[in-house]
Image (cartoon, rainbow, N blue to C red):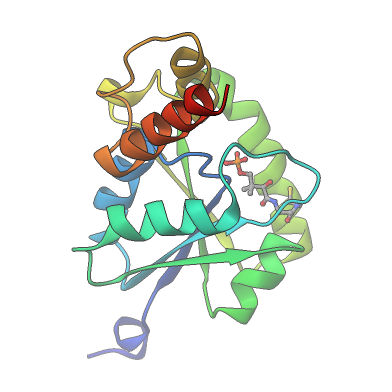
Length: 171
Ligand code: PNS
């Protein structure tokens, strides 16, 4: 086996995952078959006001990712490329749903490449069945009483329903 083939390819899939959707899960499924190790990593961002705490998002991701032997759930702060280097990852994985995602992703890719040219960003196109799902829209639809059961895994739905029931019982 050549030296190149003997190298393990570690990829980081970074994001806010607030909360994880079927779109994210589809990307995890498809990319876990492409890399030796996939680290799904949640950005610890004090500036953003997430619906779910870091611990809750970690728990949900772990629940959803059980069954994928080569997938790990982690969190990070600071520069993504520094974190990727620390974790021995050569690849940053991102999903693209529509043209509207492209501009932001392009900017991030170029910035990350400037910061560390050794790390490549790899994109997977979202499955068309999930190309309209975003965490932001899921939260909005749920807040307004819409059905999100086909948009998020049961682990997330249960928590969201629990959260809503808690609010009602508090009021
Ligand atoms: O799910 P999101 O919110 O689109 O993910 C954005 C994320 C976490 C990939 C991005 O904000 C990020 O990488 N933040 C880390 C800080 C950083 O490295 N910034 C400079 C690169 S553009």
